[in-house]
Image: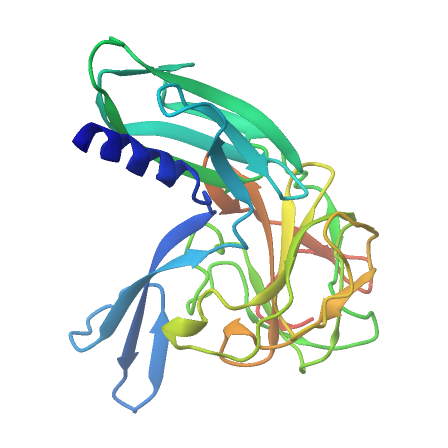
Length: 307
């Protein structure tokens, strides 16, 4: 009975969604002037601060690993509901009398909207009991993709508008993690039109969240649009207004096409657009530097200030 329970438990794990999830730690402290600071970096030379760690979903969980075999011979498939590729890694955490074909750890590239055979697991000695514990990791994007660093991204708003970049690459407040190091925050009144800075396919959206703030409860509650570009990179437009997204998953959008309206949903201190280009750097989602084409035609690296 113990053996059967162990196997049932392990199979149940595989029916769970292998979401694109990361653990992040955040800090809060009050300076000598009474100003409250929030950051994902530990305060320097400060002893009195609060910290908390949360598991933050980068998006809705749409990658599942399922068993289409039996309890005695699990046959694993990945089911990718994203409109773009996802890299999946399977690895053993603990095994007894178990082997996999192909051997784990193993990485797989699962195309968008597809089912892909991954692996078959069997006992080494069929006459003995066996058990296993394992880990499933998934990262959006194709690790073979090469971001075109020379591409001229359009400004993600209507051309005659004037806004202010409040945080650029390496911003002190929150642009320190791999996924956001090269992100840009543009202060925009709520409800301002957000345009695609580059054409591509809408890989995923979140459109139903409301409210925002700098409390931990808001960390995974931002509305956004993720667009997959032809070179395999992905643009994320985040903190959008509730139910303002005007594109659909799988839709092809053109450069400067409206995709939604700016807002302040999720982990946000005020209305703004969080814009970032990301790429899968081998089971790791990282932001990459980019350049904007300004209204006068000049190519510039984003900086804090009027834009």
